[in-house]
Image (cartoon, rainbow, N blue to C red; front, side, top):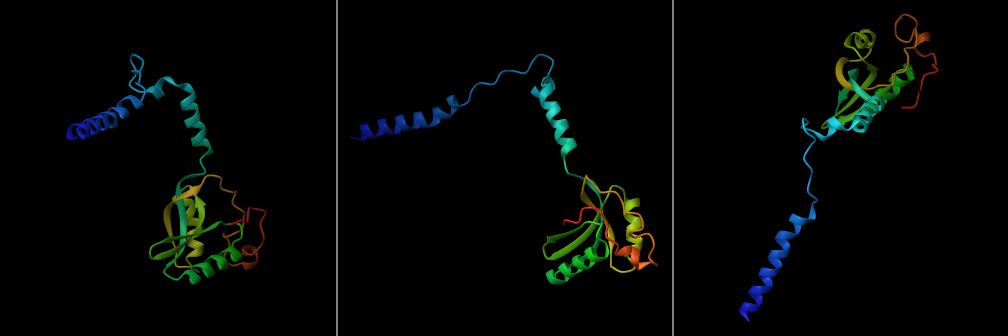
Length: 163
């Protein structure tokens, strides 16, 4: 009887441990002179290039105008900013324990600093590195360059206002 169980256990272990060995097809070695399959596949590199062009985000800068634990204050800050600057995109994020409001999509720190100088009069703000949208709408003239004329700040713009 013990021999019968030992035989069943041995058969089971043999099937269990040798099954995965035969489950994968053998890989062929790379072509001579190449250490990577990707080097010889022109379709693959074209796909990678297309994905890079279509990618919707890149490294850049935004201006952070709020950072705090209160969600309602964060939402109110974002709404007030959107009313004052409808042509500038705003983003809300949550990084435990803080809600953060960041605005704008700038490719360089210099571009972000122009808006920062104006916003720092109203908001406690700072320029921060961030992933930004690649498809940045054109800057609307007079949106934030002249702080003495509040009529220009609230003027509607044809830019995308969906946030």
